[in-house]
Image 1 (tube, rainbow, N blue to C red):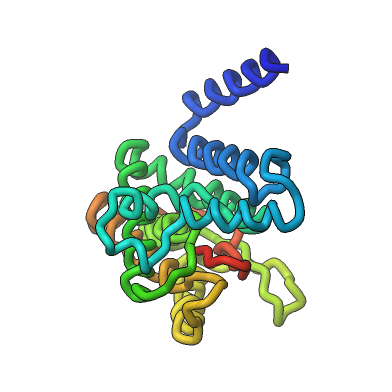
Image 2 (image 1 turned 45 degrees about the horizontal axis):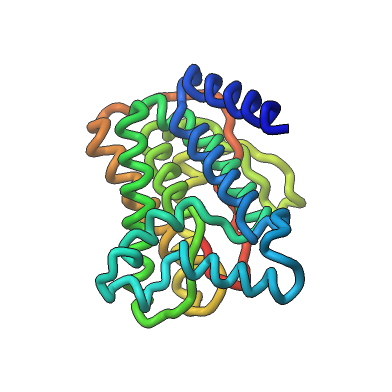
Length: 253
């Protein structure tokens, strides 16, 4: 069994190193592994079941997620949580949704930026997106987990770099028919929805829309700084639409 796992991980590692976007694939792999071995997946018997599992989940999110009320107390552990929270997800839907859109938008963005700049961009924007949310909700004791702030930054960078790329979107008021629109139409519309939702959101459990907005703005600005003006590329390919949000018992973004 150990040999089989070792061989599988070895082959996956070689594919990641040979891919044009090793950081994107690496992030997806790490986030998936962290989730599977953690209590939120419900697969690790060490965390128990029922109330014991729920208690373990709350403790896990509190330890590795961002707790705004604790973040600005100055402890080294709390200051690291905006980085660790990027790799923690609250449910299968939360994980799969984030990883899908990291894959779709991250590969092309990383190819344009290069692995080193993309790594700094992703982690830096993700950290600042969570920090911005925490600053706006400094009194909240709710833990916040998820990579959506960083992925929103990727969407912002994608909008700047590939504004005419066709994005396939599913609109509920049109019976979820798949329609194709340019990124410059879909992504600003998504950002506007986040803005409206952020204005109505409270400090309780749910989606951290403000972190999405901060990440999106940082991504747009970072792409302009990293790649310079006049670097947009015209594409005719298609990509799925922006990530969906899924409320949870704890906060996530």
